[in-house]
Each structure stands twice: as C-alpha cells, then as structure tokens.
Length: 96
Image (cartoon, rainbow, N blue to C red; front, side, top):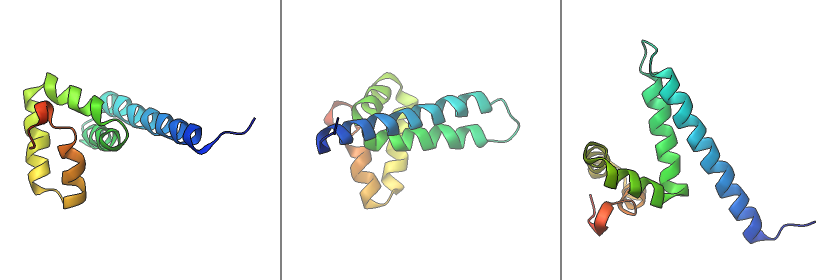
C-alpha cells in the first residue's frame, strides 16, 4: 500500500504534534526539578504546536489571559517569520 503526498503530510503533522505534546508532558513532569529545564521543554512543545496546530494554541490563548499576554509579548519581540505564525493563533482575530 502506497501513501500519496496528502496522506504523508497528514501523518507527518500527526507525528510532529505527538512530539510537541510529548515535550509539553515531559516539561510539566520535569518542572519539579530545581532547574528551569521543564519550562524550556513546555515552550519548545508550544512553539512546535504553533506551526502544526494553530487552532489548539488559539484555544489555549482564549482560555488563559496570562498565557495570551505572554504570547503577545513574545510576538512583539519575535522575528517576522515567528510573529506571523503567532498572529495566526491570536484569539478573536486581534493580532498580538
């Protein structure tokens, strides 16, 4: 059975989303460590999800004002390519 390009793209997106969720989960578990490495893993996972599943990140931004404010502050200082990706996740259509 051969997969066409569309099916391969879907499988790739699922694999990358699973990797991002695994990073977030491991980051949450590692947060109890005395070093801030858990936060790095959580932010890396969210960063990956921004490109793979912007709707999920938009949902998170709608649920938490603090998280939305953090992402908006990061977007203001981010390079143009990252700012565009973060703008796609802005809740309610307003850009950060």
